[in-house]
Length: 156
Image (cartoon, rainbow, N blue to C red):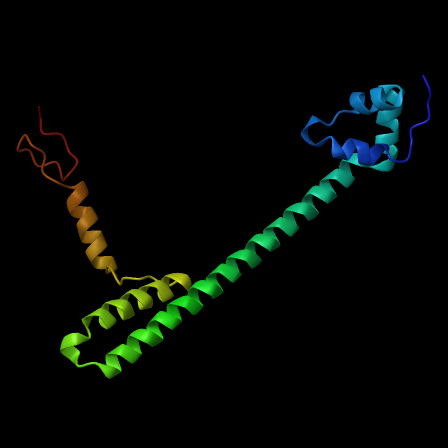
């Protein structure tokens, strides 16, 4: 067995992907696994792989964000075209015949709010109302007629 590991051994190792193993590289180049391990440690193969994978993830994340931003821009542009046409129809038609434009405008406004990350419906609940609802839900009188709100024993 030769002890000479070629300079492209790391690239071959990296290219193996999830099937990466030092033994595979040793077999490929006709060297011992120990020789590959020593070379990998000396050249920092594991750190290099982590660095490359981190860069690849960062690039993929950046491209995904850019793609999402492009989609949002396109959708927003389309929604605004619909809004403009709906407003134009509202201006040019009498109110009785403009209901189609009103529906289109309503839909376009909801879509615009959705694209920019705003809620499409306002359903705000006050803290007081939420507490009251939870209080009533948790401290209900059960079906046997006994009131268990005090958490005590009924003496049964």
